[in-house]
Image (cartoon, rainbow, N blue to C red; front, side):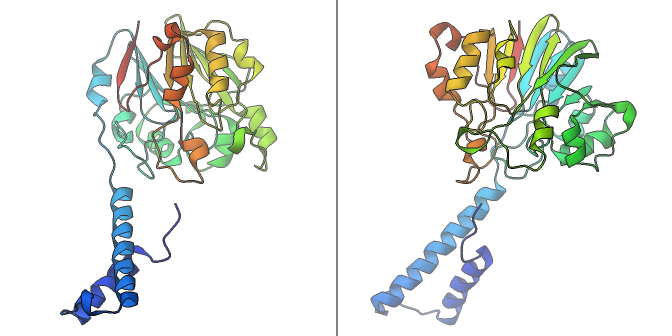
Length: 321
């Protein structure tokens, strides 16, 4: 976020100072030039105070801890912002790409890390960026839960201070499937995009990221879930065969609208959930990853696929039949 040339404190103090020094100041007796400067100071002060208010105010979401706890039979999902999902299969709860920190958020996260730590069994992370591999969230889960962590090596390299014991850690590799808590997990490659629909190559270890970052196909109660992570469209995605539940990111740095359509039309999922939108405060510099286009994507789909498309609010529960 770009700071104003006058800081919040400077703008407020300057204006209050003028009013205190000149308590009987008559704006209309001043020259047009001075009057204009005073009105400009008022406007700057108003804008700065408004920015402070917005940065400290988050929209409410439903509290979902008790709802998750009480769900003990069947399959259900909750969106918790960005690419973060909670998936519960009977009494087993898994999570993907959790960021439950408050910083730069539009909405209050619908569950606290402290509450989630009481009920979470496994947390999966796709790659090392902070909106997916959130150090605050993962450190608290390491301290307060007994859950298993599935973290690519890029995450461990980026966040060496997570303090996760080896017996609680799985380091996935694309195309090397494994099973955990009755869930079959197939890690797949995730090739990260960037501004202007490009592939991210400016990071020093971007080749390592291509080799180690993961999307995941989960088989849960006979249904296949695809979470691609942050990735451009790859032939690997299109060769997956039938997918029942798809989490899709229609952002500039992922598959946007056109390639998301290709993926959806190829896989024809029973349930389609957009993600990676309306989570972080947008700025001109971050819109390539904070702004999603879920409504535009839905309009491009056939009527039958539109009926399978579910844009959830943060904290909203959806039961998978």
